[in-house]
Image (cartoon, rainbow, N blue to C red; front, side, top):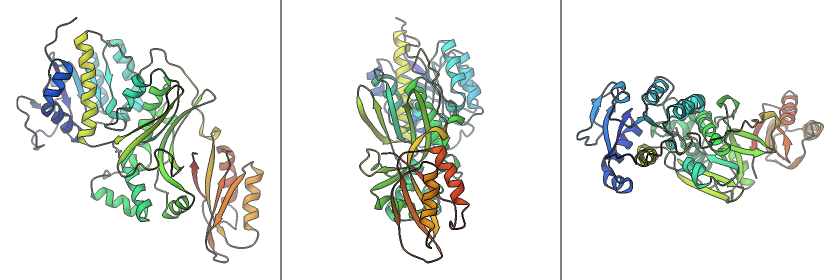
Length: 434
Ligand code: HSE
């Protein structure tokens, strides 16, 4: 067994997560050493801004503006990349791997798009890449999929993996407020980014879903193959209807195996109020995972923030530290499976679901039969219907819930319905999971 008196690390990126990671490494150094047997020493931190006071005592930690100072340091075992984005994060990671450094990263956008290249480079170099912090912050979901649930065929994952969207939907639900107004408040409170596009349009959730799908099924999924729809079109009317029907609207990242094909999709979803993730509110994340042996499991916690995300980063550092100490190199395949599969990713048109459809129907005789006629023609069967209020000759919300239908048929039917004179605007579509 190789003798190692310490595990030496360097952090690239001294922002929110970098600061949390440094704080945990320094303030929890005793418990980390007791668990590992040797100390984890934070040797260097690099950031373009080396002046700002982050409120932690760094002691002997060297601060540098040059990430290469960390990547090329022969004493550093693990490079922690926390700058996010594609450039220069990818170059830094690949260069660290080339220099035989293990890497820990929280960078879901990078892994969702360039993960395969990074995993292959790491396996070739005999080093590990840890990325627990890339999905659902402090919730140890990747380790659970990779290790705790390793004996299972994973059947499905339903995840609330974006705290910003969950916070916005929670306020819209509890206070009946509009999307734009709540988004502004979330930005003012620092929950939502100044440019919230990645969060509210579901892109951040889709990045995380790409990572989850790989770990669940051992099949790489390209980010562009994940159907992605955000929450910006959700209105208080839909939330009210959902409530009346006993449902909640959540932005779900869904991956499941259906007839040996994978469905991977992110969209607002109506779920029954007693579905396990329905009561997960505010900035919290949760994942409901079903395995064929274990059955249903539920994971809950904070999906963002300096300390929860730092907790996941340091856990990866310790895992890699254990492998270094025991000389067991890449004991765990970087992407969890030694043998990958190439299962088909089902096209969105080919999925089936139940649908909530809210038509803006002009309130006059015969409209209902016209709309239901088009649905019937396309093999879409109506389960129930609600119309609230009456305004003769004006558009009123008419809600229909369908039995299971093919997405392609729903799209074609709605294209036809939306062009009808008796329909006063585009139909709102929300997929339902039972
Ligand atoms: N922006 C993410 C969220 C956190 O709102 O959950 C980082 O993944």
